[in-house]
Amino acid sequence: MAKKKFKLNFVFDAPVTISFCVISVILFAVNQLAFKGSLDGKILSSPTTIAGSVPFVVSNPASYFRLFLYAFSAQNWLLLFTNLMFLLMLGPSQEERYGSVVIGIMIGVSILFSGVLNACFCETSLKGCNCVVFMMIFLNSFMSFSKKKIPASFVIIFIFYIIQEILQVSDKRLSGIVGLIICITGGLCGSLFAFLTSPKARAEKKSEKTSRPISSMTAEEKTAFLEELDSQSPRNNSKKSKKSDSDDDTTVIGTIKF
Image (cartoon, rainbow, N blue to C red; front, side):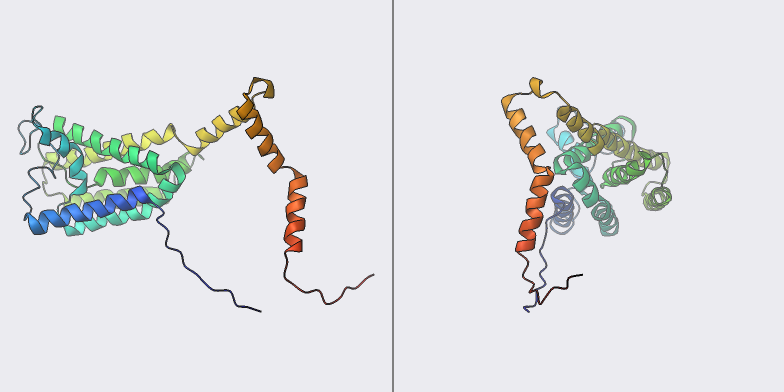
């Protein structure tokens, strides 16, 4: 009997999450090694109020780039890899659940909302993908909230991440805490988009579509509906089972009759 070969296939399972992490590492490395951190005050820091260090100027195109690019930066290497580690742990499962396009939209909404809030209320620039990490934490918790349960793991990881952010805040004044609240708010706003595209909502729409009377369907919908019914027929299942039995490579030595 021939031995089966054990193969491992490399799967690019979460393209949006992995691409976000790769871009963050590249931009941060280029900024630190090639530009000695000079890009922080130009494009890799979120805009602030007029009294802040990087005020938002409507006529300056760089201000609009700052609304997004600050999420690919960080205070230091340690914070960068900490945030990316959280993303790689939480992101792939949510990207598989909602889809890469929806997760990409959620990330963009979180980053943009946090950047706009910071430009309106805070004098200190934001750096890093904290709002995206909070969004992933909220998305993971929504899976249990739909069952009217509050998971203890969500509470613990949320508290630990907030404590870690408070300890790492460079500005210990009120503006530093306001920046943390802005990141939480941005993550919450991005995660709320999941209610519009949740798998449960898509399943309900699909059930509503299949529950329509056949007379109201178009010709293409009728064909697809009949093919789906035919594929679920027990007749086809029995054929598949017979085919699988005939394809069996085992050898029968004998039979015993009672």
